[in-house]
Length: 556
Ligand code: ADP
Ligand code: MG
Image (cartoon, rainbow, N blue to C red; front, side, top):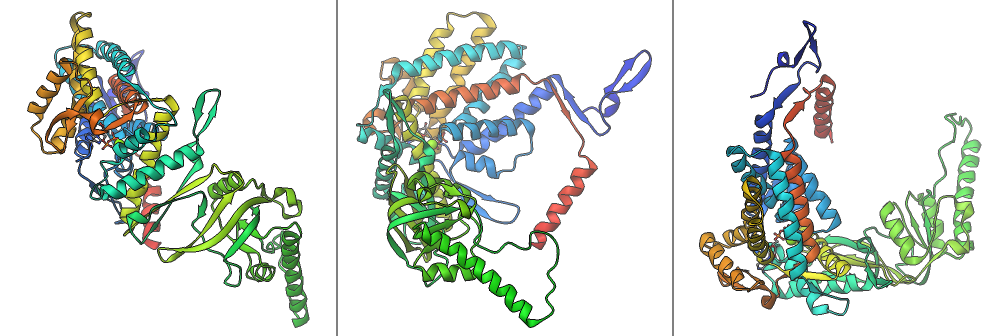
């Protein structure tokens, strides 16, 4: 299949011309396409078993032996360290989807890979990729219109609906599934968090997902997961003599170290006599003291510092009764700035009273055997943190991922104002509509449109299959219900039958579905367009770099 470089010799006036470097491997035409499709199919098969509420988990072991146990599509794809370029493209699509919508990633990869499987069958019948792409595009448009037609409205007032949307997005996560009460509680927290940060502007609902900070701490149980109206920082107060609680906090945010800088130039200071050392140290002490004086003078009683704080500076701060935290992450500094109204100050000399932020209370609390700093009652009430808890590191991480998905789902539902039933109901409705509309087209194009309809049924099929149900039986029943007009019927995994998803409260944001379908179709299209893979041979430089990396890992 892969041709050797000699095939890359172009004939130019009788002279062979080498247009690609030595070591390049080139695959062309149908071979290239089939190779890519095979990779996409393999990827789809791998994550299909995690889809839906009864999906299984994957245990991922990285090169260092660290384990992640998850059911989350994006996480699996990220951790798999995929090498194949076409499979990598699918992963990129899933990642983008995750950033933009926060849910529906497994579905999109499974669907994309099914679209490609069907495309392969069409290729076998000598249908050109361009025709397949055209058919898929027509079908996608029908799908979008179908979704818009069946979507229902949701507003900020519909707490129950929003909660169900959160629950549906979390339902596949086994860490939560065993405990319905906890799941309800977390769904409530997520809805509360989103409603807190949501605002209306010219009739549009605006939610910045960044306003909801997520923190996690192992220890305790999942039920201890809580919503904090304010910011939680995963750091401790830097000095034991500092107050652990400060009320009416005036907060300074510094992104400069409270340390005496190493001598600015590289010049060495030669100290030969003990008096000189003493003078040197005294000078250092004086400078640190002045820094602290400055902070105290503008009226700050809490300091969050992005850099280090010298031991001596800590001591002076403690004496002034100032609570200080050091080495705070930049992203946390920014969240603190937004929440408390403080300005992040780079040069201590510039610090004024106006730069200080406000919070009713800043306190250090013990969480799961470690200290965290809570900033509550902020000037900006629209800043919240969800602190995920759970018995072990693996559980907390999965809970945190579920919360992320749920925030994404509730946010998407509100931003567009629409939701649809889940459990494969919209996919089946799309399949039916696409098949109907396909009749308007002829020949090869129609075959491609019909292939899209077959492909999208993979979603209800996989949900049923993962629940141990008879997929052929279920798909036939589901088609029959939809033909009768029961458009919200989907796979009821508890009853092992088809059922009304709306009634069951299995609902999802419209956007998750439209985006899932759009990105899957786009990804399939992208892969179908490729008829030539030109892969550079591994360069010497890269290989030696890789070796170096492997070595340094060992040293660590
Ligand atoms: P994704 O990464 O695509 O969101 P999930 O594993 O979260 O993958 O599965 C999502 C699918 O599972 C959606 O089609 C959704 O409607 C469906 N689903 C979620 N909860 C249920 C349920 N209780 N019963 C049936 N289907 C469900
Ligand atoms: Mg999901």
